[in-house]
Amino acid sequence: MIEPLIHVQNLVQRIGGQEILRGLNLDLFPGETLVLLGKSGGGKSVFLRHLIGLMRPVSGSIVFEGSEITTLKERELEPIRRKIGMLFQDGALFDSMNVFDNVAFPLRERGEHDPAVVREKVARSLAMVNMTGHEHKMPVNLSGGMRKRVALARAIISPPDVILYDEPTAGLDPIVSDSINRLIRRLQSQLRVTSLVVTHDMVSCNRVADRVALLHEGRIHFLGTTQQLRDAQDPIIRDFVDGRSGETVY
Amino acid sequence: MRVFSIFSGLFSPILASLGELAMLAGDTFGSIARGRIRMGLTIRQIAEIGFGSQLVVVVTGAFTGAVFTAQAYFQFASLNMETAVGPVVTLAMFRELGPALTGLMVAGRVGAAMSAEIGTMKVTQQIDALRALAVNPVDYLVVPRALAMLISMPILVVECVGLGVLASYYVGVHVLGITGVYFVANVQKFTEGSDIMMSLIKGFVFGGLIVFISCREGLRAKDGAVGVGRATTATVVTSSLAILITNFFLTMALNILFPAGQR
Ligand SMILES: Nc1ncnc2c1ncn2[C@@H]1O[C@H](COP(=O)(O)OP(=O)(O)OP(=O)(O)O)[C@@H](O)[C@H]1O
Ligand SMILES: [Mg+2]
Image 1 (cartoon, rainbow over the protein chains, first blue to last red):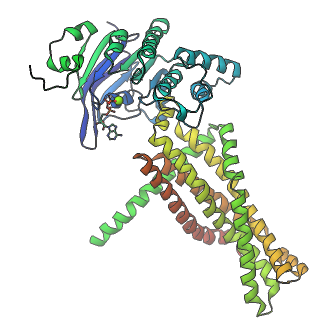
Image 2: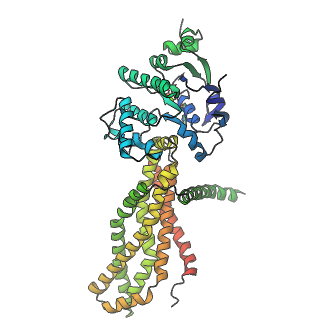
Image 3: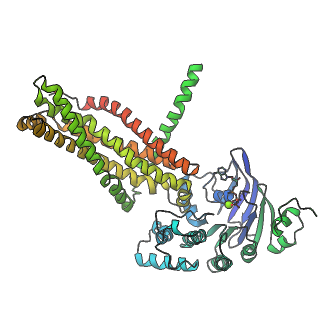
């Protein structure tokens, strides 16, 4: 039996009286790509934020590589954050820096100051997300999808062990979406990156997922392969997979 | 009981803020002591804070010196004490007006900008992005600003006072007709190193107040654009009041170290 890389147990989070996570259990195994589905406002982004210690749970535990991270202090989380990359839902680019400096940021912060190396790596990272030629634009002047791709380039420039993608293909055209799906796959096969992909995009889900989890009412309602997801009879899963707005009259 | 609850209701938020400010300052100085200093960012902040603030500070100093000289002259001339104008204005500029006015101007110009910038980064998740990239926001944002402010403020205060004294000389001697030699001699006779020391210390302390208040307000901003506006207002109001209040206590304390009028 392989040890999970990330082991989440009984995670509970409440914000302002609203119970968002209600005892969430999930294991992420090394090298796999797990897709997390769930309805809008269901707490997927909130859950991802817990995995790199941006939020602290009310109760429950998150074990990363054998050590508990929910009790760590801000500075103690840094070594863990260096191993986990995160693509924020709306990119969270630094708006005072142009595209090049945004993508180069993680490299420079990790002590890479040779301009030739930085230029080379940034160019490669931007090429992977089809953003070559936009280096000197400022984030405010990019379209939503472009911003997302720059953020992705920033997240993968010095490839971490784990990447958390918050809707990597939302707002992208089908062609670019497809290249992002391939990229996620390639990072997995070539660099053994472990990925957690939050998405609403069933095409993307089917392309990248080794396993699929469905978050419903603050818990993991379903966990299995994409085939099991397609075959499931549970109405909650069916509504989600077939894209029906609940309360269906049969 | 009722009175007590009103008092605690009034003071506990103030105490909590003071506690948070002290923690932020402690965190910042801890990082500086451990050498977590980003030189490039610090230099950029010095240019922004120190260089960019010179014009306002110098104009403030010059016109305060000028108007103070005129008023002092009108009062002292009736007592035939015109030659006291120089030392009075100079001492007041060094000990009180220079540091306080510089502090207030810098709080308005730089403090507001700092909290708006950091606050915007907070509400647009850029601070979270920093944290996710294993970059500590205090190290990255607060340390360079604090260093820049603590270096720049004493220099700005000296510029403010310097221009105030020059303006005083110009108005006193060339406009109001005080004898130049007396003016200079009296200023030299009554101004000491301790007066300069006092203005440098005050500048340093006010710089610290401004930078930590504005960074704290920025870092805790929430609720989008409205929240950033709120943080900016709070920064200007709080740091101005903090400067005026601290100024009084600093004057009392520093007067023990560097007593005035003991020559
Ligand atoms: N900082 C916050 N303060 C208050 N409520 C919050 C905060 N962050 C998230 N929430 C609430 O938590 C719930 C879950 O939000 P979350 O962003 O995780 O949803 P999501 O599953 O990512 O949705 P989507 O698919 O639309 O991105 C929402 O009801 C949201 O209002
Ligand atoms: Mg989300």
